Length: 418
Image 1 (cartoon, rainbow, N blue to C red):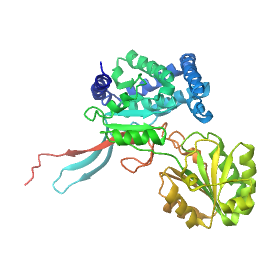
Image 2 (cartoon, one colour):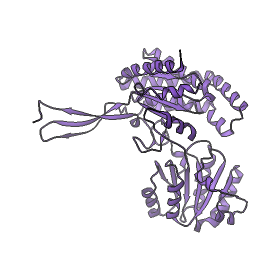
Image 3 (tube, rainbow, N blue to C red):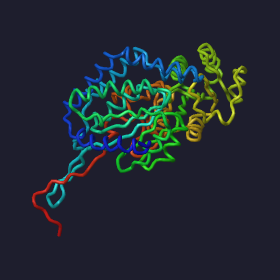
Image 4 (cartoon, rainbow, N blue to C red):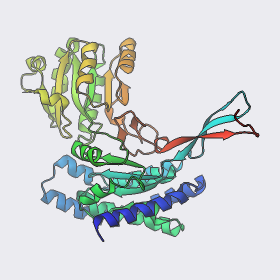
């Protein structure tokens, strides 16, 4: 069987299963997710044995430390995967919700009702927890899902998928509702992207190269998230101690993820005091700083930033630093170099915070909080399928509602159009 035929058969199976999943009751879907969560925890050793194979291969290939971290399944992360499924199970089911209803002069009632999208293809890299997160969100929202992780996590993803499919089978539900592509052949992705009659939406998660490849080759609608160039702007009226804590968390806690801070902007009136303070703290945490000329006049040991640095998603312990004239200058920098992901202002000036919220149109805009909160779980979505940095049909972290669409429903009592 060719790769195309293999992917077509898989997609046809998913399309058939989607009809069943779309009509499951909330109770059955919640029970399914809870049993899946229990199964992941019960088989922790199996998952870590599979993950160990991926980690050995990653280190042999010289994968960057931050990327190895994204790949690693610790006991804590397995528990987090399970807890994410339980949290999704506890969320309101969007399927069938009537979001609005209005009466027309002729007596018909018109409404909008949420329905699943159908079959969703997820193409992702490195992070095996995506397998469980995506499965939970897609199934709860009534969709079938096809999961194609990167070759670097093939053992981990296959193990997670097998455990979740065992639960589907135990509940007499179709395995086609949740499928993991187990071949590492890149042609599998290319062939999946041709199946517009079977797959309704593609969501790529990973580096900019992957997203651009998928966007350029897909016949299916794609939710894009090219990269996370996240900014933190320290205003002149900021609490500098709070600013230091937020900036350290945003850069250092997990530098290899898309919501980590990549550029620090500092108001010129705060720079003389704040830059030496934050530079010392960042250096202690192993962060390399690359600054503009004004920043380097205050902290000479900073490396010189280039034009490329301002648009760079490092995903490692490197931080670009720029001194800006004011809020307008900070917003202009974000508009020019940002990726519509997450932007933060640290300030005690209410008017400045409200201007920032209004004028910065990234998918998540924050006041006095770390960019690391730009995450579906942290924002109360239970888990996220990804973060959309395009405005159609979803923008920002995507939860259950973003995996549905709305149809019109019309209730009449015999009306005919004249």
